[in-house]
Length: 287
Image (cartoon, one colour):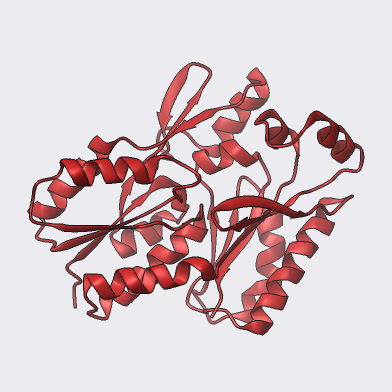
């Protein structure tokens, strides 16, 4: 049964091209500006590697900006033509970007028949992507727009999005830690463990030494949560040009789930711009 509900997502939900296609998600890109040029956050315009190369070469940080209301409005009009009855918009949380604000403005500008709802993920990257996937799975079972939105909102507090940051440099350059903390962390080779809590990024641990210690800390948090009970349709390993770390996690996790549950994705440039090369997360939803 084809759902009459269309899911509009933004480019920060960091799914794979295969997943976007399989779920028929419409993507509205955010923007990345670096070295005087603005790119849409789509792989065809800017890849992570290219972004990191420019950051290294120019010793400059990118700026990111929200999607424009016009992009949402365009998607609404197309959805109307395609015969949808309702739309759910989900992407980066309202505390982390102005994109939801843009979507709200677009809804106010829209004067067509579609029933359009926004779900605030209070999250980022595949933390938001998980809510989109589970919401779409629920919609496919024939649930109404009200039921789908209520279900998705019930998932928001249960998402576990967390990351180990390989290098403190980008976080420091972005003004997220003081110079004293940066120098101290650099000497001790700290790898911050960042968790998304109530829509905010919180450093909850700083494993010191080799990166593997950080990876193992994150993995032990995941194992404890898995023992308590997680939803086992979609689990993500998401990284920013961190292939080796992704392979390490995949080898440890692949036999824990049925085939197709564990997904490895690379973050887009907006997420990468704020955390730097080699960041990696394990993301899932608690039961």
